[in-house]
Length: 180
Image 1 (cartoon, helix red, strand yellow):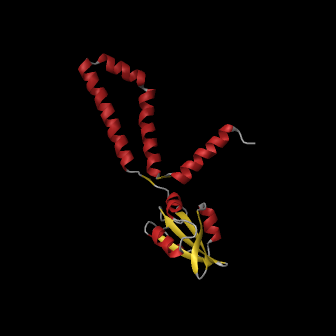
Image 2 (cartoon, helix red, strand yellow):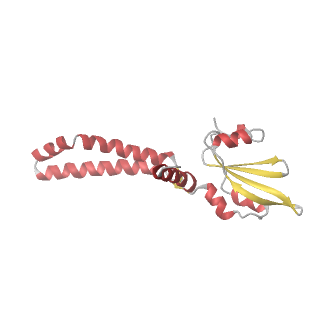
Image 3 (cartoon, rainbow, N blue to C red):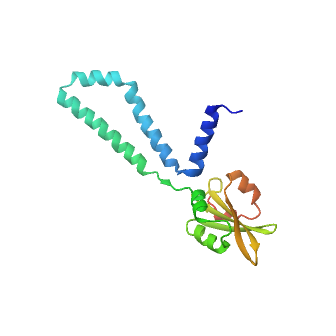
């Protein structure tokens, strides 16, 4: 039986992993903010003493300058990142089971940078790659289709961790399409 904390942390991780597609830039921006705030916190007494010995106008100007520099650095760090919708959530919203395969390919193909059809037993599997173009970091949406009354219809939309799809579809993927 899982503890409440471990269930909560796994739920939070699952939400962040599958409902929000965070770029690494946001993590770097938060890290930059922390790195800037830590010295201010450590040397807060020294700053108080320094500002206390200055005339009030100069102390106010130093405070405003420090805050302005902090906000500019933080805004610059944030401008290097973005939050984009998760491709899997997008696929779930726009692809319905029973939908013609060609229509689903048209919808997902507009936003993906690489589409790879694969044959798996009696069904067709289409892999759509989003985000990073490196083989070990690409995000994949898997579209499964089966033949029903002469045409292929979507049966499932899913995603997998990198090591799973790399193993399962290694004979199908054209690795030269990815960056090294």
